[in-house]
Length: 208
Length: 208
DNA sequence: CGCATTTATTGAACGTCGTTTAATTCGGTA
DNA sequence: TACCGAATTAAACGACGTTCAATAAATGCG
Image (cartoon, rainbow over all chains, first blue to last red; front, side, top):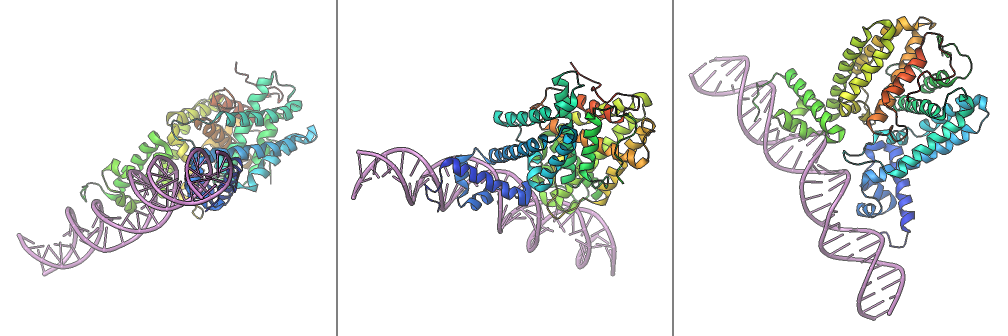
């Protein structure tokens, strides 16, 4: 039995989030159960209910951690030379997704039950992430009429990349095209924010 | 107790798919249980295992039905005048999604367990759908160098719209931008396949 | 028509799940 | 040392997916 002073509550919460992340990484949402997480940190299921409201709450925290790590990865890529920043950001995004596909898909596979809402800190994390990308891309989007227009385009791209990555992770993209997911990502981002006088007609990348 | 000859096996399978769809429409994946579907068609859970391999199999069939209905909706929109076809297709897509958000999200929320693969008929359904959209958009994409390039762009857009719609349905899009989802869809599609001499710099739609 | 065979359907059971709660066990304090 | 409060547990509940022997009904056969 785990002794009372083995871990301070906050440390225990962190341990639980990491254990849950590890389970998700290995077995996905389907294998992510309260009992498995508890066993992994050497406690019984009941203890997790002292740390989190329920399993949904724990999963939201794991997803928050994932968003934080993605934010860090994109921030690093956004520090590259402006000329290659678009491509670097796309590659960083897909590198991150492909490093732990099941942990990534936990982000979008999990849905809160009917009445529940995502907590405010989650919204703040997501906002921070989008803001950082907008800031990194701003030099390439000077022709946009306003910051709001810039943000709208970045949000559209964020959603689009998310669509590509989740279809890829769930193997529903290869059903429909034998193209590396990140090639689709580059295609979308290049065409959406290419600042130069790119003629709109032919797609810039053809890919074998 | 349901009598043996109340329904032929195929009819019973159809009833079960419809009942499962109705449950998903009302309660989403979380509420979609074998017992609830069985109760709805007046049989016991065991009977469903004579008709489908398991719950995953039933869900894949429900999703196949959804794809078929989307295909029909897009085909109708694709029959419009070429000039307005882009916008009509996007609107048809979002009309379809918003008509039954929970049934729609079943398409992408559900993932097969580790070893399992999607059946061939599912791949065929998806292929048919993409092919129809490519055919409808072909007149607008004559500048593309090849049918493969056209298809790649359409697949990218298919994935992008999927990303927008699932983020919207799971209320993760409004967290990040107060923009109607279909406005993002129009933005993406216009910029990706606008055939005319659209300058690449400023986004064509600004939206209040 | 009556009986045997086949087959759809059931009911009960198994193990697992999320969650709750009363009981227990421990560390800190007097 | 004895107590108190807090962390932890064990056990239980209802619901879940799934299996399977038992049962009921329809069919085929004499």
